[in-house]
Length: 324
Image 1 (cartoon, rainbow, N blue to C red):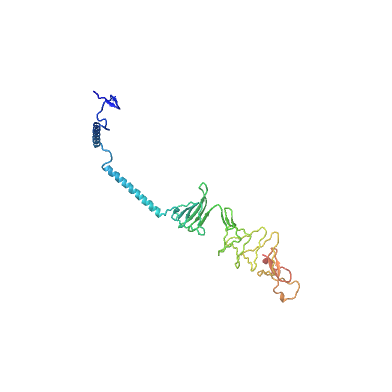
Image 2: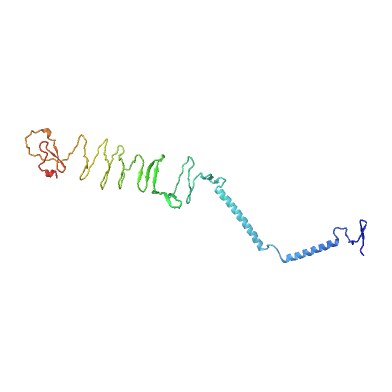
């Protein structure tokens, strides 16, 4: 029969459980301990049959791989620090190369092993710039399509400029020398040729003045061909302090089409003119010793000049021989 216990003075029909006043009954604790012991035994038996993890040579290989990676990382870090130290990397640039607003600034010398592409190369203020090459030096410009426009080639034996037009100007911008496909223009006030052999022209020269330097003589010469001078208005030959000499092998001609040939000088000498034999006197005349070196200047029908005796007719006995 179940016992009835009074609760707060009132009878209660609830059954009385032994050890109800304790927190955990002892039989229940004993049962839980037995269950945990069984679970641990089952777990130990399962672990003994199936091992979880890396053991043996796999574990050794893993450790070796990790150590190799750590060693490679340390070597790479050391090499990176060495490169930074050798190249002198800093916050401003690399070595003597500084990064400035608008470009790069080089404080020393630069050795370019391949091509150099730049829009502007300037030296420091007050310092010269030197470009040096062991073989040749070439500067080229190209258009937007990559085609060559102009080129400057400086080699061991020549300086070559390839451009549609070459111009040399002074500091004021005035043209000194211009060369193109059609003509070569010299804009200087005076062109001076100091070569001992002079200047050789294969075609022709057009100039308003040809003048020799002071204390030097001017020679116009054509060694194997003819020399011609043409002017639409006039040609003037002037020697202010000396003489002018003209010589030829066969014939020296002075020709005027519509005007005249004027010899304006106080003395005119023609020492090698032929002299005609004296004609028989038509009328007697007195002999004057002062007239022995005086002759008449006569001309043949073809224009050839000859000398005749001062008295008498201006003719010769053998006119055919003199005027031949």
